[in-house]
Length: 130
Image (cartoon, rainbow, N blue to C red; front, side, top):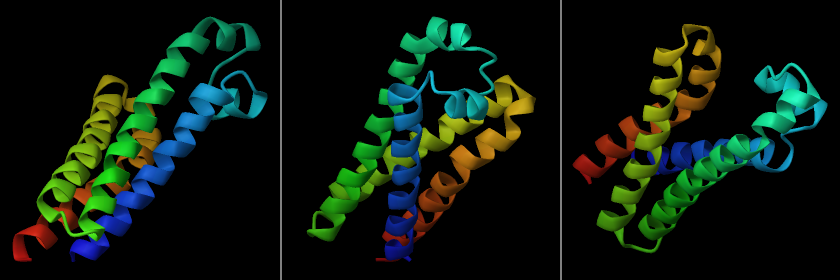
C-alpha cells in the first residue's frame, strides 16, 4: 500500500508542477487565461505577479513531495513518509480552502485535491502497516 501512496504522491506532484508552469511561466497566454477564467490579457498582466508567486508555491509542494518519495525509495522511510504527507497534506488543504472560499471552484478543487487525498490515505495506511 505504501508503494501505491508513493505513486499517487508522485502523480499529485507532477500535477502541481504542471500548475506551476501555467501560473509562473504561461500566465498571460490565451489558453492559460481560459483555464483559470482570466477575462483579458490586461487582467492577466495585472495578476501576473500574484500568479507567479502562487505557481512557485505549487512547485515547492511538488518538490517536498518528490523529495519524500525519493527518500522512501533509498530507505529513509520515516523522513520520506513525513515529507510525502506534509507535501500532499498541504496540497489537499489548499484544495479545501479553494472550494470552501468559492463553491464555484469545486471542479478545480477536485482536480487539485483528489490525487493528494488518495496519496495521504494510501501513504498513511501503508506506513502504518509497514
